[in-house]
Amino acid sequence: AQSVTQLGSHVSVSEGALVLLRCNYSSSVPPYLFWYVQYPNQGLQLLLKYTSAATLVKGINGFEAEFKKSETSFHLTKPSAHMSDAAEYFCAVSQAGGYQKVTFGTGTKLQVIP
Amino acid sequence: DTGVSQDPRHKITKRGQNVTFRCDPISEHNRLYWYRQTLGQGPEFLTYFQNEAQLEKSRLLSDRFSAERPKGSFSTLEIQRTEQGDSAMYLCASSPSPGTGGINQPQHFGDGTRLSIL
Picture 1 (cartoon, rainbow over the protein chains, first blue to last red):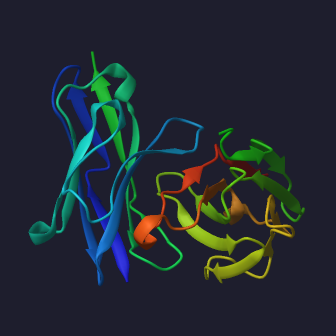
Picture 2 (cartoon, rainbow over the protein chains, first blue to last red):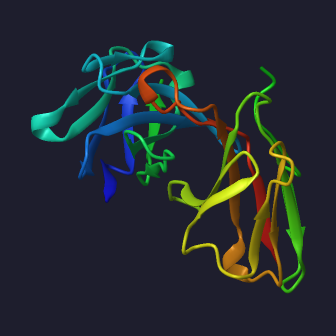
């Protein structure tokens, strides 16, 4: 069984401020973890992925996430928010091997205030 | 890489009608997935194909839903006798086979088909 919990359905930050979006996972086997971004009326775009290599993962658009097994967390961060970062962000988990069923969190809407 | 393409982007229909959506995956991807996303929720897995074989179906996929991928390329998702609760965004994703070391590759998503039931 696998699941993810995203803390905070809405997060507001000022432009230029740190972005921190929280994700905790549950998996009975070593997980693969992903962050996706979704803009209105569009599909999901992969930001970054963790597949058991380096625990600090760098993604596109200046985002990064750190896999912490002891905390079962995979929080997404960006040092300085841009207006264009306003979107909905989904954390997702799948299990290594198998056919790659992916379970998504409920999402966090990021608002960037000018 | 032309991306995953879904058609139509929007579909409005009356309750009780049948609808069919199409997904064209990235050409070299042999895995194809369908998800449903309702307002305020993350995508929920519906079904998965490896080439033309449908290998997994979620319990969300009632008998009114059927998906096919006849030649291992494009896929269709049909909903018969639509109900109000079917209103959602239907997302298609594709991925290649596992890479070196059996590592699963990330899924690439289309822009979805938004279904509205009147």
